[in-house]
Amino acid sequence: MKTKRAASEYRLGEFRLSVISDGVFWLDGGAVFGVVPRVLWERVAPPDEKNRVRLGLNALLVRTGRENVLIDTGIGDKWDEKRRRIYSLTQPPTLITSLAERGLEPEDIDVVINTHLHFDHCGWNTRYLNGSLRPTFPRARYIVQRGEYEHAQHPHERDRASYDPENWAGLEERGQLELIDGDRTIVPGIEVVKLCGHNRDFQCVFVRSRGETAVFWSDLVPMTPHVQFPWIMAFDLYPEQTLMHKKRLIPQAAREGWFCVFHHDPEIPVGRIIEEDGQYRVDRWTV
Image (cartoon, rainbow, N blue to C red; front, side, top):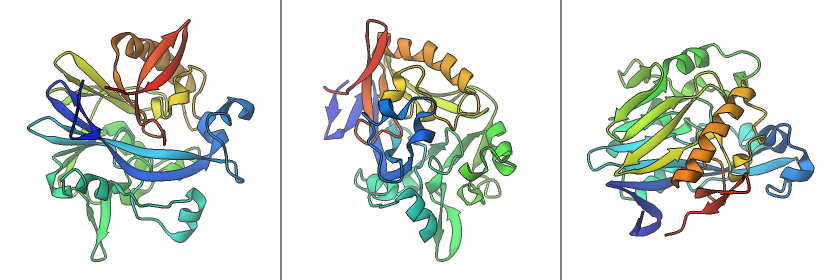
């Protein structure tokens, strides 16, 4: 795999991959690292005075030569002042400006894949234009697991705060929402795989071209420290399933040299998983 034009653009076979930043936000460290003691996680993610840790918002743009595919859409800009304070939102950059730096306008996106519908993964699905809420990507089809979409309409007390209906409002009515059931090839070389864990209908995205593989982990492995098997977010509704998937996929990623995208890592958005004596760590991707 070789870089082209800029350090943030990578070649995967015939495809061009770019990490698209939507800035950073801050979230409670205990929620991010679950049962891992603070004395361990604070070494890799120092908390602020409110026990919050800094998280990245790293989407992935895949240019196949035929389609421009955007995987997750960040946290968006539909935030009131109270929630901006809670999450210490200090954009820019935003996903829209990050796309523009790569020569793309929202109209250039053909497919949006949402790994799930938590607010920090689908915020730019929609935006307000002239006071009206509209799809940010007017030509795109939006890919969501049917079960996740149905749950997002009626979330329970455990995860209600993670959903904001504004982030998918109008997509179905405009014919842009494509609901799928289980694993699916979205375009040639890009496959979604349903992995119950973070929630019931969560999906990871695999990109393959000419024998090379990239994975967009989303919240299965949100930051590089989470390659350690027991490091699982407290948000996960099915943590034992998360553990099972990690024990299967992380060793495979290390063996096969996958290009790994870490949605929430503010320092190492892409890297290579390394195995040493049965333990795993991440090296920054170098060429």
